[in-house]
Every structure is written in C-alpha cells, then in structure tokens.
Image (tube, rainbow, N blue to C red; front, side, top):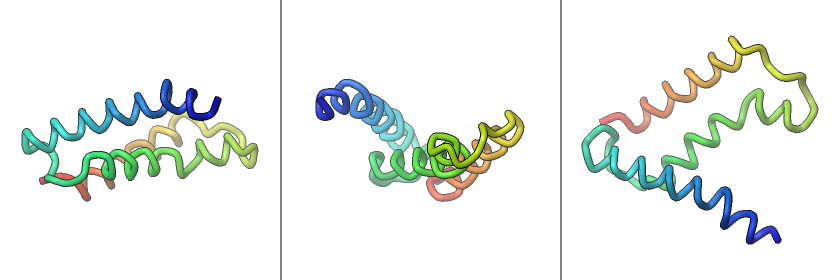
Length: 84
C-alpha cells in the first residue's frame, strides 16, 4: 500500500519537479546540477518550518503573513544556491 501511494502521489510530483528544474538548468535559469537534489533541497526548506510543526501538532497553523515570509525565504535561499 505504501509503495502504491508513493508511486501514484509523491513520486509523480518529484518527477514533475525534476523535469521542471532540469529544463530551467538547461535554459541557464539555474546553474547546472542534479535537478532531483535541487528539488529535494527546495521541498525540504518549505516543509522544515511552520508546516512541519503544525502537522506534528506542536504549533497552531501560522498566520498567512508568517507563512508567506517563510516561503519567500525558502525561495530566496534556493535561488542563492542555484542561480547561475
């Protein structure tokens, strides 16, 4: 059951992200590298803050402004690492 869930859900999303990032790397929008690793890094940053604490029941859902700030920071850090 777990394998089926993974193949039909998360694996498809990861494949789409890998393709998107590989294309961005090929066009020179991101520096060359492993698109799967880049995607894992980005998703990890998005999930590491408030969303993880909320899913675990440690904190209440963040305010929209706080969540927006976390997302902007994750994007900024990702681009600092992967911008050409």
